[in-house]
Length: 244
Image (cartoon, rainbow, N blue to C red; front, top):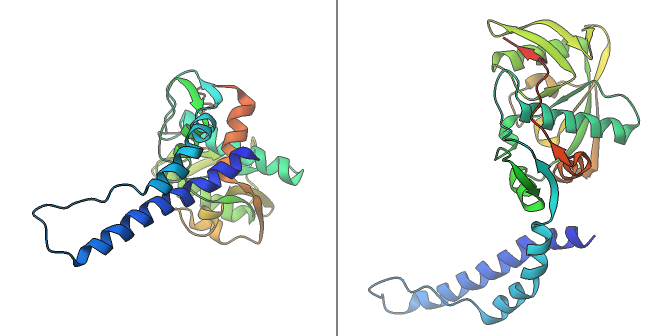
């Protein structure tokens, strides 16, 4: 509870600080032009307010979430980091629904950093996943899952969980879902973020779902914090789910 309160407070404090600074600068705009720009001093009341929370903020942001054992990056056709983030979103969706979720998918552009060896702190995770999205579970018919696999293959690979196939000239070949041959006539549950489901990535197949469950109380940032914390140690792992 304390962590969420501080995370909520950060943008408000920064807005207050910069807002006051901008206001002071505007007041000086009617004065005679100076030879160089004179930036206003920080407002003492705002500085005091920020100082009040700085120690607690540093303590929370510096808290260890997990330990990363080696550099973990995105890459193609599959990658250790792509596998990690797509598995996390699929497993959490299954836990929330109490049902088996077949596929997880999220684009690399939803993230900002790779992971480096050593302590992974709360601040690191928030920088890694800075966007305000929530977890979504879509129902896709099998033929749409096939389209999704081809769209991933056309990109040369992407972070996916539950799908396995070979990329052959930009097309997906030998598509398996959870180690079973794709059935174009059955439905599959696909976990992703609200940003991807709303058209924010390069997977048009997921926009044509037959059902959608918005888990608005599951913030994607919190999802990754919880997942990394539960693992304690994070290792780079590939399993051949996507192959050239």
